[in-house]
Length: 100
Length: 486
Figure (cartoon, each protein chain N blue to C red):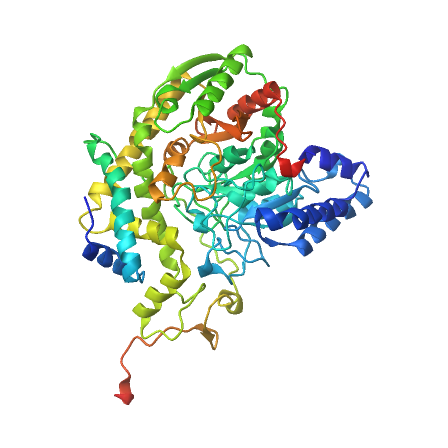
């Protein structure tokens, strides 16, 4: 399979990764070269083989449902690039209400 | 000096732990301008830890009373959290991230008495096999500064090879401990998946990642793994097993009767140099001379490991790296127009080229219409690889391959990403199956660079591979001091 420039832009949007035009072209070439190698996996006869998601069998690991200490709020937001009043700041995502 | 010797001398009062710390810090000061193994040196933490050990000795503690790694200089890959340090993953996106909690393996090392020297440089987010893709500049190989040290745990390997640290921790998703171990002449283990907690190690591919130690000797390596192993309630995938004393396995290691197999088809794979191949065959002959039985196996499906890995690894990475959104931590773009713009630009500005490539590859492999053809197919191939190993371990105790197809190469020699990916053909199948493997130096190339043997063991057979590695180490008695460490 090979990716068009349009495909690369689509995948970049899915990945929320801003790419310049130059990066998009380089990425298209790199990805197609890598996929050219990886595509050999299609030749394996894998009919009826169970997929393996994990190296060792681990099923429903639970812990007792008891409260444990967690980060205080100040520590939880200590690495936030932008914080206000003890909260993470995000761009406005809803309409402006009274302003509009 | 080995970890055991350092601890013994501190207990006997021959020198103090603070003297050890000062001497290690002075070495870093003298050498690391060239090597670039450290992203951050934690002198204050080192001295404080050393003072705690010295206080124990002053209080009358005997050697037996001291913790198992008392006074041993150690370093940690910069994807492992340690309170009060930056944890950058050698990425601009985490340039200012300060750890609010400890990685379990790091905390266990410190509880075992190590002197924490600092955080080691690495390929960005552990994506790479040469140590060149760090946002803070490449790590250099202490054997030859014009060559790469391998990667991604490049700084962890170089710190030990240069004699700056006695033990370091790395993480291995597709060979990131063993391959730099081979290229720097250090002992380096990827434990069985689940042997060591992954808690607090920034996730790359959660079903493949495993933490393990680098050291100069097999016994030191076993001592470090003994300290960090074991169930951790904070990592549901850590295995609930009785801790083992791996050091015992390295003492008077006897391989008589051990069933050893050369992996013939992988040894004959394209790209392996003749001196690496010969060195592995010589090691096999060495095992036979010591009383092991040596046979051959083929692992035909494992040859497809690279393809399966470059689907599964990036798929899991693209999902794990989705958390870097410019909001909760990490780099944030200025003046975003809206949330999408914030995501697009924060990630574009923060991630380096290889991280972007892996994110794109993984997102594509998981996207609608391609999921079954790539991710589904890779997961099935993974089943076959695991079965193939299990079949081999029915007849043999350990399997031998080169760790890397070639010795350390010169900077810039591998230009395109695919050529770089091919350097992990021997290590990747083990991560996919989840069993354990160790790199042990087994010789030198004509130009004096170390060659590494990979000894592969079954699930939780670390004692067996340590035994084989210790026997070979004793038999070969190589001088593994890099020019910088002499």
